[in-house]
Length: 316
Image 1 (cartoon, one colour):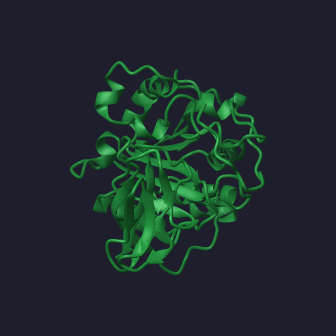
Image 2 (cartoon, helix red, strand yellow):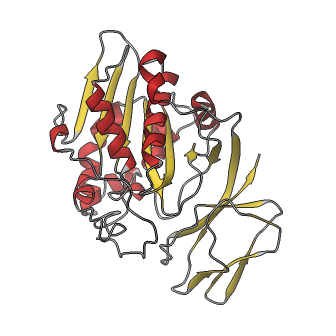
């Protein structure tokens, strides 16, 4: 289990029972729903982190509505199921993962190596399904209560895909984390020459009630962008789209170098700093904003050596 981080937020969401969704693919908790017409293979994934409930709620919703694609193939997948089943509302931060972060193992060297953890075993198990997908929509949530974000990756194709969905208002163009590769950057998703594409949505704070309808809206808009469902089926579940989207281009992460990292103040994320303003101290080193208009993206409370403390970006 991950080391617990103090939680100040109420648990407003209930983790749905997913026992009925063991699936039909031969890979537990992955279900493929084909159509009769040719089209893309779309994959929607949830619970990459076991304590992020909104994605499980969104998939449970899609199953309960009996949604079927008008073309192509739709796969719905619960990923880090062991961590999800370990979720405890009395200690809700502890089940983010069991042995290691499931969203940092998606490089070929790790997947094809001999590292043996709960998360690497599950990643290897679901990898054949991931390889079949043309488009991925990966549903997440955040430690702190902030506006939702669409993580589009570092490539222009990711930004274009985010614009097709048209929501949420902020799109983050980023290359991920020094600690390891995310699922949304795996293989063809992160290859500019590949037609495959992926998005990762951060729906708000992990357990706030609002995160669930944001996740559901995102799933429907993903399928609408791929022309896999008609708007009439989606409309009752859609939220108003923002008037415009803003892209934040990540210039780099701050990766923790010592066991004594502390922020200069309790940043919540999306603060905009002037050049030279203090962000944090890492041991004796002061870390300052490297340019004017420096946006802080998703500051972490898991301030452990080798982890990302926060990402820095600018509006473009």
